[in-house]
Image (cartoon, rainbow, N blue to C red; front, side, top):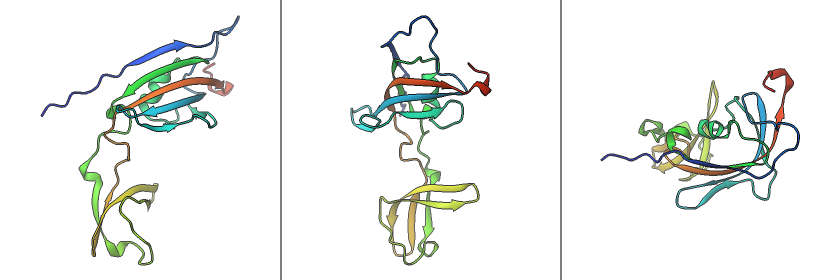
Length: 171
């Protein structure tokens, strides 16, 4: 069966104009401050900064999913962007290789295990999150896929501020 990929689309609007000087834009090395709403294609909101402080992230430091950062490049203060990210530009496709069966005795006996619970395995590279998907007497099935893997995501983002660190040479 051929799977059609949804095209990445975006709409750009300018809410405010800044007088007499060029406003800072989001580019590599800046800190972007944004209000955002993330929506699944069916309209369900999965995350939002509405009613909270805006999100600040350093551009180029891999703090955001790749497609989000790419779509926001060049946006100015006051600009609103709406865009859709396919899984390859967000959290990737789901991988069956990321689902593993772990012997129950690898978990501390006093640790309560429940299907749907997120935990983390300690690795030399740091914690690696996983979700328990099945439990039997001897085996616990765990899924290391990101919970958003395989999903198309829509975003509505307003740029609140763009801060420049003069040491980056970007602004």
